Amino acid sequence: MSTREANQGSGVGVETACVDCLRRSWLLGRLGSWIQNVVDDRAGRRTPELLRLESSDLVQVVAAKKADQILSWNASLTEEEMRGSLANADCWSCCRHDKRFPEGFADGTDAPVALIGRGGGVRLEELRMDNSVTVVGARKATGYGLEIDPANLLACVRAGVSVIHADLEAGLADFGDGSFDYVIMTQTLQAVRHTEPLLDEMLRVGRQGIVTFPNFGFWRCRAQIGLQGLMPVGKTLPYQWYDTPNVHLFTLRDFEELCRRKRIDILQRMVLDHAHRPRLGPRLWPNLLGEIALYRLGRA
Image 1: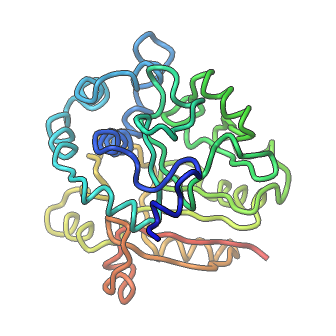
Image 2 (image 1 turned 135 degrees about the vertical axis):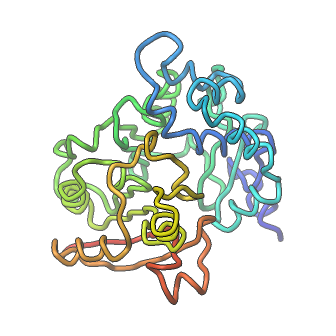
């Protein structure tokens, strides 16, 4: 029995999102930090209003200087490439054109174009408080991915999904010790100003923490600085020095030294290429050939 057949009737399924919706999702992922930088309370700059724009208009509004480059990249994405990335990550996808797309998220012109998750097909309406999902904000409480349309927020609450707006720079004081099994911060540590206290807070409110970040020690980064005298720009660091959301850039060795000094236990490490694939090179020489690092952390 195929995976698709095995998940029939289980809600959102496997690889059901259409190509256009996947391409839009990939674009929003690429534009996330730019959207966060321009969003504010002015008309036309609120997150729902930005997300209602057509792709070409959205790119022009949030990243005009790189519009041609970004749109060309987005148009070049193939169905095989996008579905392959989902398959490699063991993810399912479902878009608003699928009849199994959750009704609570289908209403409104700014509803998500696609949902991407892991595990077998899941019905959002079947989620309960005893298996709830918590979404915690990144750098700004008003940033991309943190501002939710009231109708969608209500649908989440009705489904038993806890959605929390929080500024990580202000800490996680609202959460008690050991409130969560895991606290996950993806591509966050390099974009916050106070990295050390944030790590402490992560391991206070969670039994374990999972972090990912780009490796500034990657050989191409070294070559661009050493041979060209320029700040690195690449697939995992796509920004120029003057428009980057990153505050701190560091290497695997830097991070592991910080963990050693703070007595944080490194329970697991994976070093990946820019497409999040494990390769032989990064396994042999992680700090030189690894582009993205993933660590699972704990503290006795």
